[in-house]
Length: 101
Image (tube, one colour):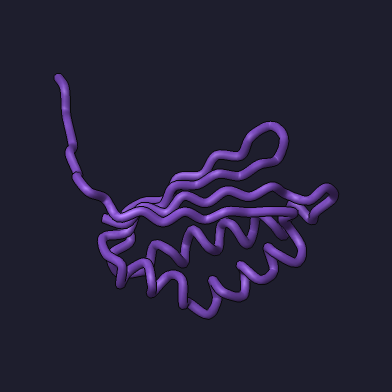
């Protein structure tokens, strides 16, 4: 499994409607990527955005990273919506799932 941690700080005064529409579109688009597992997002009170996205393989991550629509939205994010951002990509060393009853 590949885990991507992404964080970003929003600019003041952005077009929130446009921002939310693009976010919704990216949520729809990422679900079409073969090997996509999950995507969770939290926005803090001061406008910082943090997400954890999981992919089954490096190939599925590459398909997402190279998707033309995703690339265009990333560019718009840098130019219009965010003052700063980070991306950390991890390859899982171990995967354990527990269910307690």
